Image (cartoon, rainbow, N blue to C red; front, side):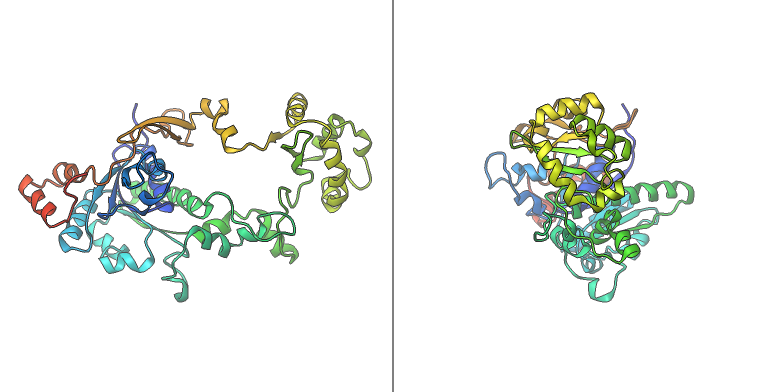
Length: 406
């Protein structure tokens, strides 16, 4: 079966998470992604958990999960010969992706003006904390996911009501930026089909998180009030949150409109509340949230989560148990959607990783190859893509431009 991005080649100068997430999606869709790594490897190779020996950079499950379907080339960009090889590779590629600090690529001679000279058709995507086009005091500022979460405001609305700000449990600053970079690259590739020209995609982690603050921003701009954490509750819809049930587990009731409210009151056997003057409309329920939730906490504690699931299912009410990672990983729906897949990973053996969420009818994203060993494809790239002879490759090895083995 053909893949959506078959024939597109990506030079992946990324590390750890934000840009590797982007290039992972491109690879899942069939692009040939060449991950350029320094001799010590992508920093993610040092992150656990490990499938065996922690000293083996090829056994990081963290790295493996983000770099399936890619090729790896070790290349020393501090040496001119290494930079020349990279120039040649960019000439025969379609996309360049990196997530260094903004000054790094300019120092190496591979910022956007340089890339335009090397290959005018190339799409060049940078991902960093505050964006390359930023105020001077932010231009070279380093940022991790935690920095982006804090600066963007998302931490200020995350966590228990009245509690301290909390980091979102997943590294959403990196991951959202990776998703948005993928969208930008795809749009730029389509524009190139019409114009013949490449363009620059400038992704900022802070931008990405600010853009997904949903109604928090407009609540401030419209009302002047500053949103605060509400735990599992929704700021504008009530009841729309988790409840502790009889067996001590948690259950989400998502009652998004007044018709659902009436059905909900019936299934919890509190029909007296349907037209209650404090609760009969969503704005009223939200205004009187504390009084309402005090009542509903007691009602929802009368049955177990499993019992509520059955009741809500029959009533066609939106609901969910709050799954832990074991529960969702073992869930048959996840298996049906192929969101957990088995791979044969060199040195690590058989292991399970997250599948591709890009579900197309004819050319879906998929995991079709394991993550590469460090520098596994260096010789192949030099020989097959760039036309170097064996004696030239030996010189590169001896001068540590590429890896001697993998």
